[in-house]
Image 1 (cartoon, rainbow, N blue to C red):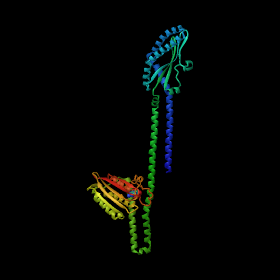
Image 2: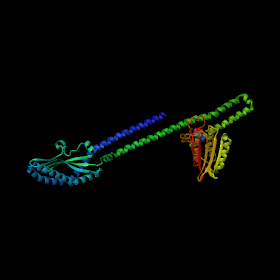
Image 3: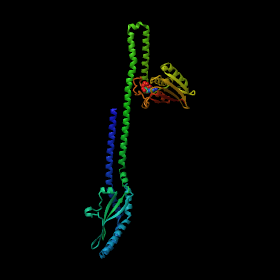
Image 4: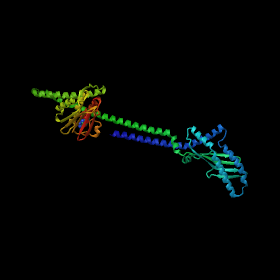
Length: 464
Ligand code: ADP
């Protein structure tokens, strides 16, 4: 019990540690993935722009640049002419709107970017927008048209600058910046990519590690469960074997001790002179020798089954007649102390049966019905048939079997543990034998029982 708990405790603890470790690893992977994502999309986007430049010998913003150059040439001459402050503000607003409008018209680059992402195995669906950071019109003077509060020029920030990964990860936005210098303008803008479901994107990226982690946890848990079950089963069998050896020693010792005592008695001259006592002792020795022989045969037979195939010599027999014979001879032998009722309705069914094994099977059930009784045994034997099987029920009013023991009573060497184990002698083989014989006949045996009320064993054997 202690060993069992220790193994359980160690097993469950290591599984918990494993799961915790895996959770930490996954968290780490997700964190790294989400930090790497903006960097990866940014370098992909720069790659895409370079590819367009390389393959088409044009910059994706060439059209935009052309339009802005034309427009800025005009406004560069208009702006120094404006003296009215109000008018200047209006003009600046108009210029900003024009620049924004032209930049928004850009579609080419986004479509190419989407196709490029897809070709590299990345997410192709994204929203984008372009945000002007700084716009100056350069004439004799420099006219500041617009400047974003957060904008820092290239001397501090660098061309194509990128927000810090942490900020990117939180905002779910990936950006890269551009600086365009026209003849009469200087423009900084940010191309902003926004994935609506960034969490999904990160999960997709870490899917392999996630699946492998979950898989490894499931395998370890299964492995532990199987090993634990095997270990417990082994322990149970080993306990059963120890019990069996103890029981067997006890069973064998009893007749052996009687024979030894009887032999010693016969050595006594006083006894030898009394012929009736000699006869009585000899009979006792004979009876105990038979019992001993039976026990040894039973053990030998069981071990024979283990090594060789179980060979039945089946013949078609009238089940009703056979049952009558078996129960009658039981009544006149060990069943004489029981009140035994029988009721058969086999409809003349003839089943293929090995008579010797079948008799042993029914006898074992009847013997147990008498043996496991704490009052005068009342045994009801019932037999009937449906269109495929014959059924034989042996019901007693004995001590009954607990639900837990019912699961194991047909196991080899199993003896119910309910306190009475030494009161009722046995080797735990009788019901194992019953089950084996029923199964070898193509049938089965079941038990239903209530502790203190009695038990019903039902054998079924196919006959068609
Ligand atoms: P054994 O009788 O040698 O112990 P069996 O295989 O015949 O072995 O039975 C296994 C166990 O099932 C017994 O130890 C007993 O506890 C329980 N058992 C069997 N038959 C009955 C019965 N008719 N009533 C109550 N308990 C029974």
